[in-house]
Structures are given as structure tokens and as C-alpha cells.
Image (cartoon, rainbow, N blue to C red; front, side, top):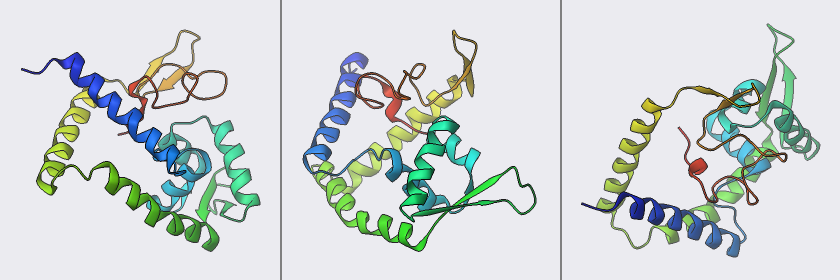
Length: 182
């Protein structure tokens, strides 16, 4: 039976190495900031701002700042909901869709290079194993945890956010399992 600590070190080693490769290729493997927002909107379509904050697991104030920058660049629109003016709908503009599409080819190249040592069957097996691990973890975690300061923290794995809205000196994905999303 494999040593579970060694297995976890190997997983984090792969994640760290893939991030280094992405930085070297000047393409963010784990999309951050504005690119993450665009990616989610491209996949999910129009979302209300609170849904987007939940999916991205970021503070609403941080999301507002990101959305302002994207709106200034003409990549998204924010419109009040017809039925509830307190709710803001966020959508990609045509320029936003083009920005996401322009990124796809180089992202595919990077992903292919990360997994080129595995056969299609091995990729299917790996995907199934991670599905099982993530399902098991999700069952064990509550939706929200009480933080020591009395505020709630949504689990994306990882502790309370630091003063800059990310974990540790390098942000999510470094040194902890915050990389995984459900």
C-alpha cells in the first residue's frame, strides 16, 4: 500500500511544477483574477454577482474591484436585475468572449504538455480517482466553517484569507490544497 503522505507530496509536487511551467510559458494555469472571472462567465453564462463571488470563492468587495476593471476594459457588463434592482447580473460582452476564445488554444497546448506522459486510459483512471477523492472530501466538510474572528469562511480548502485576499505569500495553490474546487 502506498504511503499516503508520500502520495500527497507527489500531488502537491505536480501542482507546484505545473504552476512553474505555466509561469515559464507566460500562461496562468490556475486562472487568477480577471481571467478567472472571464472563464467562469464563459462557462456558466450570465450570473448574478453574488453567485459569481461564491463560485470564485472570493469576497464580494474583491469581486467588485475585478468587475470594475473588466467593465472598464469592455469585457463584461453589469446590469440591474429586472425583477430585483438590488441584484446585479454580470455578462460577457462580445469582446470578453473573444478574449476567452483567444486564450483557449495556448491553454490547450499547456494542458496537453502537462499530461503528455499519460495514455487516454490513464487520464480516465486519474480523473475517476480524483472524482472519488473530491466526493469523499466534500462529504466530510461542512459548507461553512466558523473562523476564530467570528466570520464564516467558505471551504475551498485552506484557512482564513490573509490581508490581501489570498493564502500564503504566493496565493492559493501553493503549500496547501486550496487548488481543488467542487
